[in-house]
Length: 506
Ligand SMILES: *[C@@H]1O[C@H](CO)[C@@H](O)[C@H](O)[C@H]1NC(C)=O
Ligand SMILES: *[C@@H]1O[C@H](CO)[C@@H](O)[C@H](O)[C@H]1NC(C)=O
Ligand SMILES: *[C@@H]1O[C@H](CO)[C@@H](O)[C@H](O)[C@H]1NC(C)=O
Image: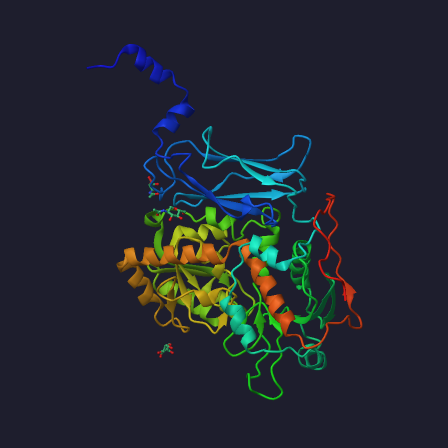
């Protein structure tokens, strides 16, 4: 029996959006929305939250929803009397049924924010979301006076394995010892040490040595933290060079000193912080930087089955094994595509090995397997590789960044001997065990998505500084030659409504 003509006509005349929505398996109401970007108190350079597409039957989608309908997000001041510049790019499709929504505020709003999350023209989950004001933007200097409350607002973990391990060597921190030793031991002409003091939430510093331009990175994160939360009074030395410095053993006399570095190694005692690379890209995401912990998640190339089944590497010649990689690649082009994009340390090798064209990082994920080989120290691309959906083949290494300790070989990545002797074998294994390889890639990605959330970086910095502060055996002081690091000029004014210090200033 044919349906009546009138009904057929009605179906044909239905507007395309409604038709698509009717066919799509996504239920706007049942879909899930969560994340720190829905909480006013979580002040970040780029705020973000997540979306999980769920079907009408209540099942999570595991691929992008079919059809033309898209998730759309509108972020506006709650009050029509307020004007604020807010940049909201389209949600990032993570290709697994989830999406990442980002927005950057260039002004503070006092009354609040209204966030509409739409699928087609339907509201998703509890949309609209109301964030009661004030909602501060990144450059508003308005520190939360109660660090406990700030950490709770960010859902900071109460335990960070790397921080606990780093400080286990330093039950107390003797600032006098550091003052007399650090400049002599590490602060020579070729040094890359900067001496910071934080007093009353103001930041002061002096440079020891010539190679301290990277202080722009330590400055920017300390200033960003101080705008958000009251920092404890502190005096510390940060090493802006590549290599960790403190090689004294725990029980040695004189004892080791807690120099702060970006990268740790098994034979040193430095206290580490998230690298300047992930930190800077987090601060400048959606401004100058294109490859950051969030953007990478929406740019992971073709689906697993459509990736080229080879291991991939591009990078500079900062370590000999990287040259070996190219050699291996030339002998086994069916397993490995490796190239050096710039010569500096081994210039004599360029003729023999050739120079590969530079490639955008997002394009790395056209390949199924990613080789992570150290540079001078740990390769700072590792966090981004882990956030992709390729399998990471990680060279064994004495070097580590702040989040490695949670990751396990064969669970989150595939380990490779430091001398790369088993690399080809591991690539063959991955090709022959595709399901398992895919599972490890997924587990690694999920762990990285959790560990490397931008707000977690702030938690990490704060906790490391707090642990340090608690151990200081004397009061931090301003030293000769220190200068105040000013907060950047921001064209947008903001009124800070937080209450002043709870305690009397001593
Ligand atoms: C659906 O997805 C959400 C968010 O990704 C997750 O928390 C939940 O456990 C998933 N549910 C099922 C049944 O897998
Ligand atoms: C793989 O690529 C083909 C050809 O471009 C495309 O039609 C197909 O949808 C892709 N498969 C997945 C799972 O993305
Ligand atoms: C490479 O490293 C492995 C594991 O450390 C070792 O067993 C092997 O002998 C090394 N091979 C070469 C050629 O040095």
